[in-house]
Image 1 (cartoon, rainbow, N blue to C red):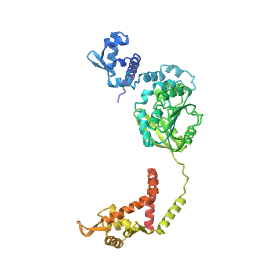
Image 2: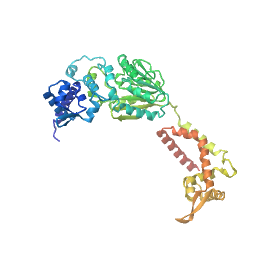
Image 3: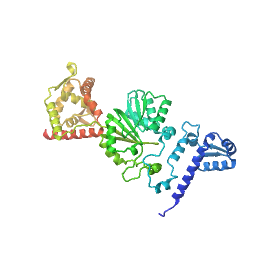
Image 4: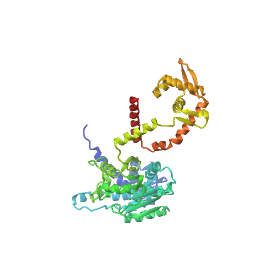
Length: 475
């Protein structure tokens, strides 16, 4: 395929489109177009020349930012939602600040200069002031949805630490959803002043503490149920593994770390936010660590990745602090298994009594009742196959159960020599009594398995299958 310069002209067009957008926001033009306006009425409202306003409006129409209805101009629904000051989620000030903050107007001078500023030149305190509306464009919603999966009980008293919380909006909405919980936000001196004001405006200062500190030097205390690290990994000055170990030490067992922000998939790949942060990188802000570097650091800190989240403008990775388990040798497992089989073989509880004279069963009898209850219509040959015993032994037990009125036999329409087996009402009573027995005495085991991760359950199942094969070979 022949190369084309089309992309370069598209870049120029996008640059011009951005200049047009920023100019219109600065002129507060969109706030006057929630209702249809002629160029003449709009020009009078913004104190500009009608002919020039005509040209500006036509350009906005060409970019899809404004609609035209004859001689009238009107915001598109999207523009009305986000670029009019009459909207609750007005993004104009946020966009203008980000344009200024990430401007590449001095790019050539910075590239030619050997002088590098030893830190951020971004005004994060001002960003905290203007970024509130964009927090509600999917970020807060995605955050709360993910947190509700981790902590379904909204009355639970949780402790949260937010490193680099900025606006504090995530914490504010968190304590509103979890009214018995408290949050601590650690920020730099100037940003902390803004965060405290926002927290006060939302009237949650009793539940959120904003502290001025340096997450590289200051202790985190704790323990916390959740620690949030939002866009801070660029600014970790020491060893990344040591930083994550510090976080892990401040988490409760089973607590979570949420890292917010994109990162490069590979050490040698370009960070996803390279262009947006280029002016800051040129001023000395370090590049963010890659996923590989983060994974290596968290694994050394007893943190396990549980989920990657990418919803709307919210992107992050969720890690859980695992309980440190002692190393187990093969011999210990073999010893425990042999002990288990010997206890089963030597068990004195061969008879189960469910409370009345006609509800007393040998284990083989009640297990056969359970299987018939689980598989109504099963026949004796299938039972023999399931238990790995001969048909005469099965027939002998079935005859006892039949004589006690616990099972019923029906002729198999497909095989006149075979009978299908069902539980009678009395058999159903025995079946349910057996279920209650196991629910009572095996609950601890069931709860343990319910809390066991699926990968560990797979290992347990694999071991049991090997053990069953071993028993059959030695039978």
